[in-house]
Amino acid sequence: MTLEAFGARLRRAMDERGPLCVGIDPHASLLADWGLNDDVAGLARFTRTVVEALGEHVAVFKPQAAFFERFGSRGLAVLETAVVEARERGALVVMDAKRGDIGSTMAAYAETFLREDSPLFSDALTVSPYLGYGSLKPAVELARESGAGLFVLALTSNPEGAEVQRAVREDGRTVAATMLGHLAEENAGEGPLGSFGAVVGATLGDLSSFDLAINGPLLAPGIGAQGATPADLPTVFGKSVRNVVPSVSRGVLRHGPDTASLRAVAERFTDEVRTALG
Ligand SMILES: O=c1ccn([C@@H]2O[C@H](COP(=O)(O)O)[C@@H](O)[C@H]2O)c(=O)[nH]1
Image 1 (cartoon, rainbow, N blue to C red):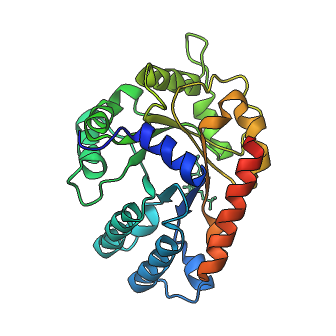
Image 2: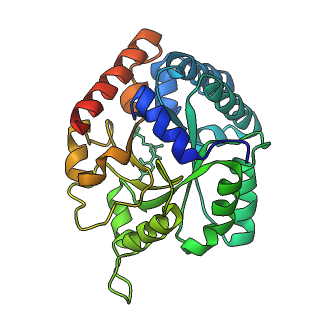
């Protein structure tokens, strides 16, 4: 492993820059609002603007792969460039691709995003455990080898997630609690922070019935366009709030394309998060 473990790199970035993660979600509607065409040139301009405006300011970027994939190979080329340039500016990149498949296919997804010499190598990847947590093993192993991390979908920010994630298993535990338990095992003994995180929506209200103390990061989407605010974080995350990486996409991006406005809104969210976290 040439890179230091993701959890340690993330903790340092959060301490230095604040914990905010800005999502790069080039929605067609945002491209239009920015006066850009819904084409590869518009996608590239949008993405470059965000990375140049915020790459030296925020701890984490979370590109949403879907918005790049919809342009095919040329969209993926834009994504590759964005990942490299974001990392060169000192930001960590969490690729939001939500991959999950049977183990042998999962190994190929892992190589795409977690093998250090891959063109799309990212500091961490979002993964879906709903083919069974064990199916993620190739990603867990490669992440450990490369110094990368994973964010496993545990309690997602959308209301539809509950029918799967809050389903109760034969042993009386919910599916989400089971996933959180697996992550706590992956991170046992790691310091200052484990590299295997959970996605837990900031929209979900009081989660004190779940044990979020997984000794790993908690990626919290849902702030801004989905209605959650930084002030909600202590209620949602309780004692684990120090490990939260609050994520905002449209709530920041709608302030572009002006660079100063993008920086100002990211700074405002960072301040609000710091205040909320005490
Ligand atoms: O539970 C989840 C997991 C991922 N997401 C993703 O985060 C962003 C949210 O965008 P906003 O514009 O800030 O609403 C988007 O890429 C989602 O796919 C999530 O929202 N909830």
